[in-house]
Length: 202
Image (cartoon, rainbow, N blue to C red; front, side, top):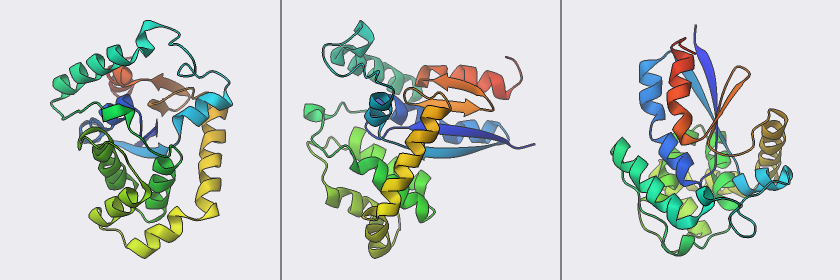
């Protein structure tokens, strides 16, 4: 029987990018349906009034230099490209999740999310602006006008709020998070546990 795995991710999250690179292999190895839920991760943390990125790092794991070294090590392990964003990237943090939700309405959330992740963590962009998301849609094969209409719609903004509300209600507190049934696994480094659940070992 096909198992549903909910994948909550943020497009500006290096660990969401890393986890996303492993989903195709996860699907190849197991009878699962991965449902992609893009959201603005800082909005999720703000909604919970627990944002570790506001103010000084609350622990060493949130230190920027440590996170860069850690992400580079995971990327090397996975054999995928990773470039730490130059200057932490200058971009409107509402746009990536809205763009991916627009692509989801057009049936291309997976391919489009990978394209945005490449924009953020592979192409070494100094800044990401609205037109970059539109061009990414065209590169994914989406109709430009249809994408722009969805991207700019109030319906997509409401859809994002609904995603945030649902994630919070399910106990999701950060990204990436995998939900299997009622079990929650937070972090790229929890992927071995996700596999363990799917294989019936834990």
